[in-house]
Length: 221
Image (cartoon, rainbow, N blue to C red; front, top):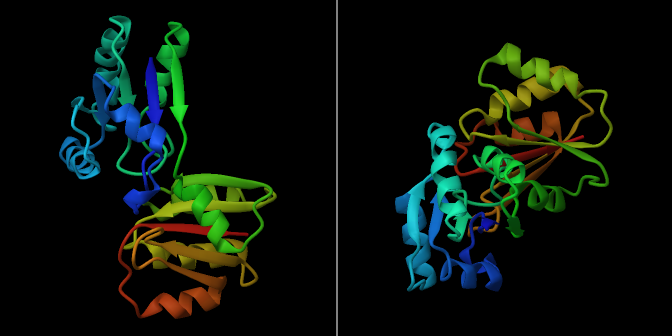
């Protein structure tokens, strides 16, 4: 059985009891960063440590077959990202696809998701929303995606680097205009959690002279 396990996006206290129990039972745990995940498990007090196997974008395709071999042997294999729900802008969907094709059991242990958390904190409507993931670094490609989603109803959610946030805000203003409502959610669930909301111009001005740090999720409508 393959277990897709959501982990906290910041505060380790958000991990569910089911996930904690499962970590003690797994044979193998696929993770983006074995060192980081190992420290996380030890901090949780996991005693029966599973084998940690690196599983990130650059090696995902080749590691899929290794994971399938373990699963066919009847081993319990888990998958985590560095935080939040795996497969959302993180590796894993190829493995799930292969498991479905080969009739290998897959289940999910739900939990934290930066997408949902940001929508909840934003104060913007979330009855319908689109997740755009990480936008391209190149301006022309980024603008193309933003324009393609302009006529789609509902809030949009973007993951962004703190170093490119101000460029994103300027692009949002250019594409959607001054009336765009924006919420910039930073360091969610952590000590310095911050949500900056307002019209895109107001948020841009508020953040313009600040050095932005930490993980950022942007919601706009």
